[in-house]
Length: 192
Length: 79
Image 1 (cartoon, rainbow over the protein chains, first blue to last red):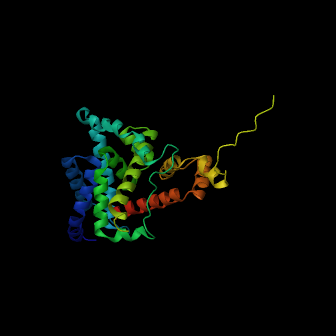
Image 2: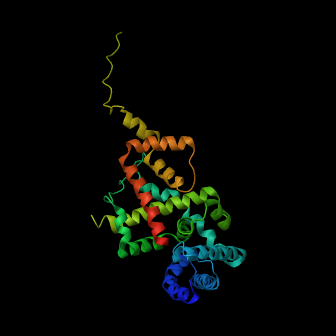
Image 3: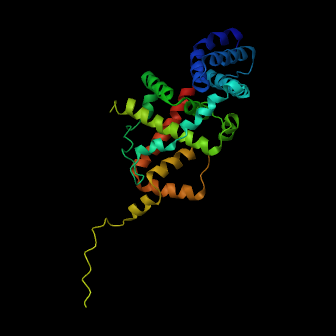
């Protein structure tokens, strides 16, 4: 693919990359920076083979830039506190409210219809998904995006964020429970 | 002195196989195992109790499908 073609195709990807970076870094200026760097790297590089989608390729570059940014951020003592707040997001008991005293569902997960996957082709569904991700507590969203969008392995995430494996699974559990509930309340329950 | 007749035992729900299997782990435990499974391998015991629980619990089976959907949705988010 010629450089001119790539630069024309990159612009529409910018807002997506920015959204992903913002959710993970929670820092507007830093998010802008890593996206800039990603786009520059994409323009200067010849790594795009056309085998994967442009977005997948860009996400791969962004992943490294975000990890670098987090590493750099942790070396700065002034911002180290940003991730220290994570303790307040570690309380797994929050979700006990969804279960009765014997550990049974209360209420039970709702029916999402025969083919919930159909929703994935609808623009409005993706908007609801964005809202649900933004509603997650900041560190929870960040960790969830690292795992599910950046596809980092759990030990890589633990290493980058200096949290232990148990903390990590609690955060991921919370993220999944909260997203499930949010999607149910804001999409599936309304589209029955 | 004669023994008093046994008081009638309180009504109990029959201990069906379904109830036994469903109570080895609770839905809460099952939901935690299903999340953990997304990020790594469960132990043989965890896989067994989860499978037994899912075989009798419609709500958790539903939750399992929803977790699979969530993963697909996040993959789509990436594309």
